[in-house]
Length: 423
Ligand code: AMP
Ligand code: GLY
Image (cartoon, rainbow, N blue to C red; front, side, top):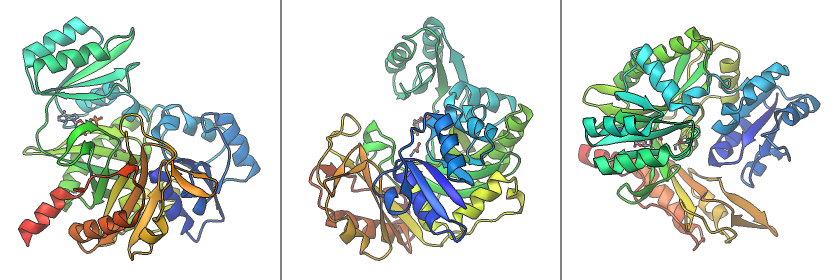
């Protein structure tokens, strides 16, 4: 099969690495790609926002499957446009991608299909939102929606903080905000492969969203992750499938927008069981990197089964080993990162057994690897336990020579503490 992979992050490097190992693969192409992806795939200069150009390329190169990594092209309808051109795509339609693209859409779906999530209200009017926050009190969570998307999520510990977040979100005409209750518990990332009708579990992980050690400082795209997530016991996975994922699949089908692709279920595991924080319609980054390290099966076979509606007959096998990834970011991230600094020693890190370095914001400059973004490297290792994987990942981090980069030194702390307590 000829496959075209879209995206340029560490997530796509991990997908490319796994796809390249498939005996079904003839040629793997990637756009826009990065130097790490270039080790696995032929990079093509395609503007992935130009769906017509992507379709023309697919016809020319006889592409049998397009795998879409990031959410932006999905929310923009690339799957619909390619399917209309007769091209097979792994990834949801524009309508189904609203699960990530619109927090209000997802909360309304949860309400209609009794999916456990924090109580919420949607507002377009700042005065009404402010009154609701004053009535509810803190802690409370304010999420931008609609045109204000990207201004993000504020977990407010005081009413004043929530009021400022509302003002920031509702400063444009047409903007909307979701105000929801604060959920207390342990967060986990849970993934499902979906074919429109059937969803099957596709791994668990825990991310580290804050930039600083001890989970402090501003939010980021994720500073490191490990898999599996100990909090996602087999019972918790069953419960999440029954109470959250299956009603979502039914609800989406009932709305005429069946979901296919990867459903990334952001969960809070509370005293009352799993509660949905949010959906994403793609693999997590860096969660995908640790999942791909543990996946024993052929990824291409699984993606084909999802596209062909065959998941009811499909099972997935994982390594018993744990995997852990440490994100190395450029100084300045998550603000404006410094670009262009030289990175040495990736080969030395990868010479350590069980270590793989996935590249994200990198570029080649005169034959040398340089930083070219915020999150730059994902130094990933496997081990018999999360503690072992952690030790090995930091051993690999320490042989990388990149003074202008930084990382958190405590990735995996929650699982390591658990393992230490269990002896
Ligand atoms: P989101 O962009 O929806 O993933 O939210 C970013 C982060 O905010 C999540 O990873 C959680 O840590 C936190 N968060 C979001 N919603 C809630 C909630 N209802 N209760 C507590 N924390 C939340
Ligand atoms: N690591 C979180 C995300 O991919 O959204």
